[in-house]
Image 1 (cartoon, helix red, strand yellow):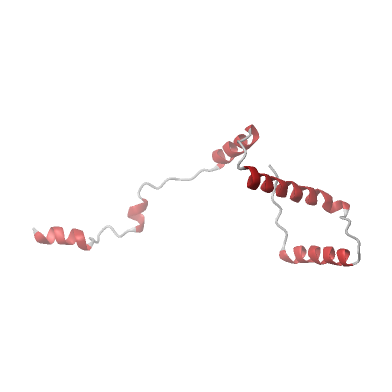
Image 2 (spheres, helix red, strand yellow):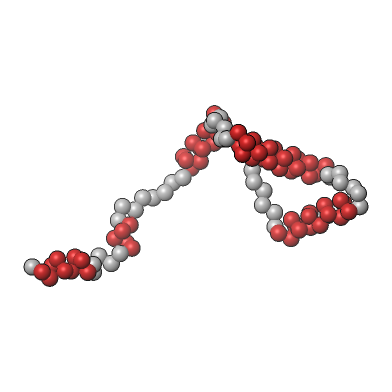
Length: 103
């Protein structure tokens, strides 16, 4: 599984500006430091194209292990009284009030 890299907007804009200048100057070669990033982007694009053209792939063993490891890392405390914490339990709804008032 590849790690997603999030760059600050200012840095992304500088990279785009440098790329545009290179293309305008006729130099469309990629710097060595960006070749791995370009390869990763091309791989992701090829995967997306494959899924669009051929449907979803069967889950691979590595994918399953990644998902299981993520599931085990989630520790969420379950609040069984959540509804009581969000609703005032001393008030009756109009429907229930009519039931008690009719008697």
